[in-house]
Amino acid sequence: MPVEPLSQKEIEDRLAELPGWSLDGDRLTRSYRLGSHSAATAMVVHIAQVQEELDHHSDLTLGYDTVSLSVNTHSAGGAVTEKDVELARRVEDLAPGHGAH
Image 1 (cartoon, helix red, strand yellow):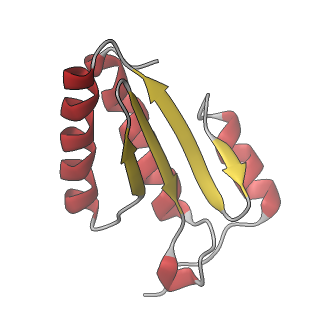
Image 2 (cartoon, helix red, strand yellow; image 1 turned 90 degrees about the vertical axis):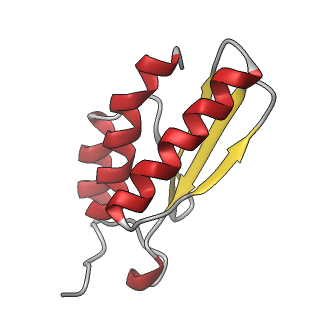
């Protein structure tokens, strides 16, 4: 079953429930700051596990004490879909456990 792009209004509604996330062009994006490089690395590994579980992957960037994500759905022509929102929600759920803010 194909994944349908969200409308601009639907994206805005979903973002209202995801503090810190924003729309940058055609992608949902978020950066987190952590207490150390080790904490940031552990969060990246945890996000990678979630992405494998969902079979949906973001561009994931590890900095010294930062983790950044950027995601859209390639199979929907690079649009934002519910798959992207679900990944963002899952990352938001795991972030506090890593001390991310």
